Length: 574
Image (cartoon, rainbow, N blue to C red; front, side, top):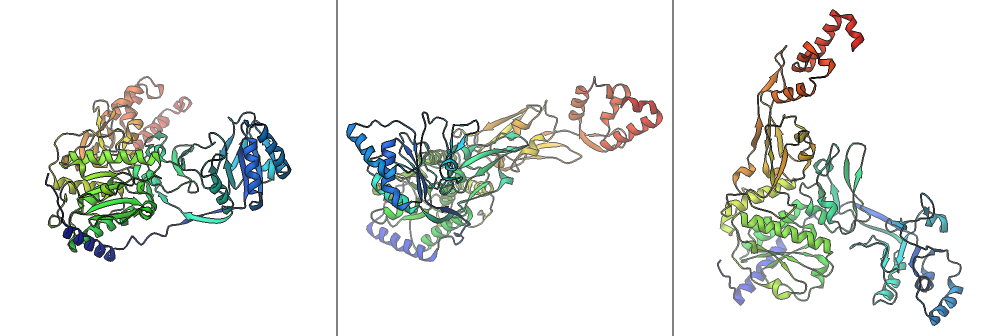
């Protein structure tokens, strides 16, 4: 691999090119998404042991509308602390106070302005806010318990968990009364249910978004026929992990939308190159981390500030490389939730596997450790994957479909490398692969085609029934496998680097079965044979009536009525 060395003059030239690129390329303009509103009137519930709860209540009383105490654990107080409770009693004795012998059945749900706390006191539970304040909800929760009731990486707005005497305790109590009033925040996402691969006709498929949300804001809701994904915008923090994990683009991030983000990176790299910049490194970083950084990055580092670094994923990273970045770097931060970090590690493993399968180095995409300025500013390990004179706009797309954009980028990277010829293994759960069909048992009923959330599976026409697959569109959701009545479909995970991946392959094909009366093709030969075998002992199809199974739906009805006309007594057998 070619070594890169830049002189001081090169760095000055790169810094100048970066300034020129920043002045020419503005951040995507569509950053005013729909907002959601919170209303908090200052009704607080404090959970914990009695001593800590009364201490906190005494300090918070002047700034809140009401305070309710819920003692959920014993207080290991000494004699002096017991005296403190007696002194606090005068101040806090009028507060509603409840005690639970066991908090195991306590349910706490909601967000700022709408917390529901249900006590395990009745068969259906008792609403604590209704019992103490004659209102349905608490506005704020202060949890002093050990451990806190909610064990989430990103807690709902309005829920504060802190231990008495901890370094952040005083500042936390000072900030709590400020959560009274009206607030708004962006609705970070948009859900396209028609693209979702979670469920179809009662068959369960993809659950990737459910597994990665650090705020537990995503749930599967079961309807009468099928389930759907629901995201609570009031609990969502905009971490972006769900959008990166979603293989179909059913969950789309709004800050910014993915297409403007990719266009921004493309334009930034182009402007940087035109201004004389060399060996650009694209760094994805969250805004708060960027604002806290000490010192500006080196001139060849082009920063892409996001609300959350998890909002950019596989397709954005690979697109930057295809547009001329010498390296893509992901900036770690102190505040990055562990679940988002795991997701990005998984996406990084997928990206590296794809790069190697396409004949490129896996070192094109790397993490930058927290506070590691040297790694941030390091020169890239290799020249640009796509030199400026080798790039053009012919293969680019502005399609809104996530999978189509990713496939286009993969095709561009394949053209720049030497793809391997065999299927390559991918990390477990990756949305790349195909299917195998045991053709002898397949009746071409098209149940799999009906549930496929993408255009991966397709059928033939009336004259030539067939089952086809375009592997590039397969996201390995498993819906086809679950829906197959004959159980002859098997998922085949792995990335196929050859052109066959994007070509529609015929998995099974057979002649259409023609109606024995009107000759209209209406099913496949294997389907008719399977139905006849299953209904061979059915009395309705005994004798010559079995021929009705070889008739189309219209001729079958006519034959039944003609039989009734010839033999009226046959009506008694219907």
